[in-house]
Length: 307
Image 1: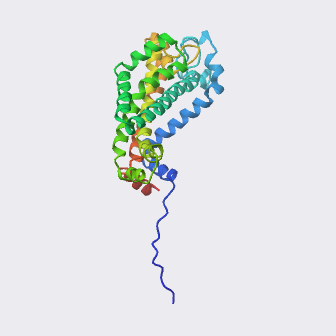
Image 2: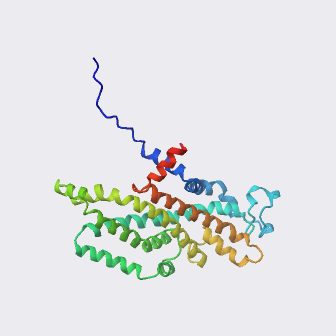
Image 3: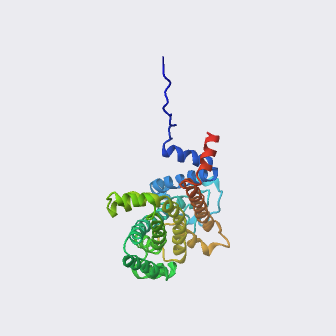
């Protein structure tokens, strides 16, 4: 006689990447934004090698060439700038510098701000006060004013621009991380780890940091768009990236004197900034829901239905 098994069969939990893929597929706006950002990233990697020579080659006979002139070739479909250089090639090449500045500033500010926030939230009140006063000092000055002063003193370069923009964004990650740590450190699993003899370093990096990372990931995605707009504003003011380097903001600045008779010089790089920023905002909104255990069930249900 066969005795039926009483073991409970636990359904297999899909891999994290598979779950994220299903949730991304459920949100079509976020899916389109992710695809667009992947394309932009690929362009940033291969752009200078692909069209770098065309982006710098001058052709004074084609000055301010209007867009959609297909007879000259596909690379001229956006028109040409004041020196006869194809705008399409220049936008493709400028993608690398634009994303490099934004990514460098976000990564640097996120790492420094997160570490300082972890220390401030888990250390003694005296250290906490010192770190928070430092953040207050940075936030007391307008970020654009700090950038103008520092770039005027040190000079305009990609490294200085990344450094300035990262300094102005450190308090955002510092305050967010500290607020999360102050709340998480009182939870039961942290108290249990402390009772079992775990060191403060292990508690912070093994138990607290993984809980804080989803919030910081969403914040960094949104902050990427802000830093990119800040870089464009500085380049528009003439204190950002300088020629012969190219960024989208610098292209807008170079085309502002031709707005009345050659509007396309500023339109196309401005449109690139708008679409990239919009995609980042849509993706950050999706990340906020997908990484939240309380809300992501909605995306998971949509993903199962669509699957």
